[in-house]
Length: 232
Ligand SMILES: [Zn+2]
Image 1 (cartoon, rainbow, N blue to C red):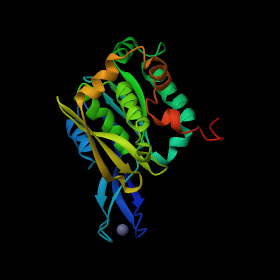
Image 2: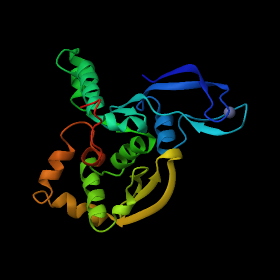
Image 3: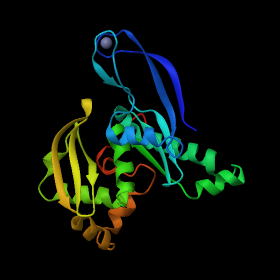
Image 4: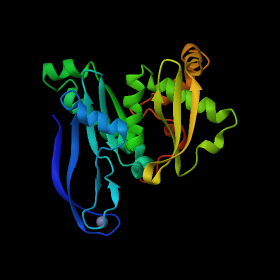
């Protein structure tokens, strides 16, 4: 089920307390409206009644959609350097809910779910958009890697990310997003064939594919962001 709890959250601009319904878990099978809000980028966004500024809470929730096979632990983007430790937490939480010690019905559901760990709203939306378009998320990260390797290293920096923002039968659109405030800087549209050629070249990409999918944090940052000393 979806769990949204009332909390008073300080407005990041004026500091006044704002009553907020904080999402701790989202069951998209029962709340397709919340899934739509995550994809649209409006989920957990509120206007401060004191200073009228629009702000968004960082994600810290479990997202489940058993019709689409999603089990995703979403954490704030700033926690990304802790991905190795968070990945262990995600694996533990998934095992607790759906592993060998869970009831048989839960294990049966778990067998249909793919556990993932993401940091930030754009990364969560990306997983949902990819699945909707029939894109494998590991191949998608390899596609990003191929774009960066072919002379576009400037697309990634300490404060920007490359995330899938749209896809259809013919094309894939990635957004270069400024992490702070999730501002879209640039749109990169590629033919879907670029994705397909990576999907088909299993041998050429085998090592990187294995490295990217060694745990639930299936993200290019797995190869780029060194785990922090505290997490290691
Ligand atoms: Zn305010």
